[in-house]
Image (cartoon, rainbow, N blue to C red; front, side, top):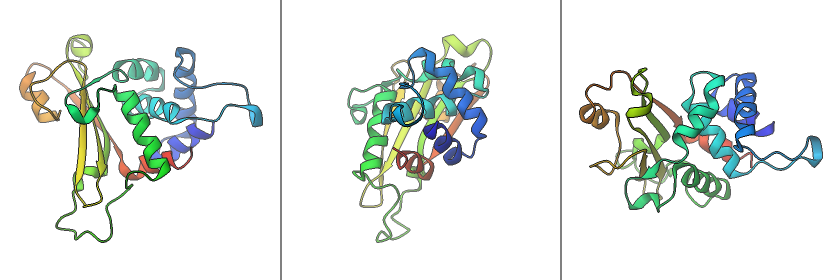
Amino acid sequence: MRLADAVAAALDEEPDRVRLQLKTIRPTGGITFKGYGRGAAEMTADDASRLVIAVAGSLAAKHAAEALAAFRDLKPLGPKGRGLTLERFLSEHIGDLAKGVVPSSHSGNVPYRVYDLAAEEALKLIWFAGRSSRVSLPRAAVVRWFRTDGKSDAAAFASEPMPFPLATESRLARRYPRGGLLRSVVVTARALKDIADTL
């Protein structure tokens, strides 16, 4: 449960809610499980990726498995996604944060005017939330990360091909004007780094 507690603390969520979400996705093969206590399996970056997607993508704990299923296999919209699904890309990114391969925040040596605020949104999930749009309208996600020069890079993912390389709420709203309610949720760069540090 250490990962659940770390995710709850990083995302400022109720620990009991996140533990319930973890238990909800575990039977679907979403989380490594081998016993309890000292003999239990260590949580991996894959586990962290799945739990973050489930928590961020569900408004209620009982929908965690549904949210994970809806977002985990999103395909990249451009080459920055390296041909990986959202789940695999996020897992590798969390692993890189844990190892210090990518910067977890902007460098103090970079002037503020050069600093790219967009990377503060480390993960954004976007979806149409109306009743009629659950199956027929796309879901999208964006993973952002800092570069050493103070700028950021981003990889976008979606449930279907899009005519643009980066998914945003405004682009989806324009492309699907009858979509109704469009939701998005952001996991901050600091939160993702705090989660990575527990691995």
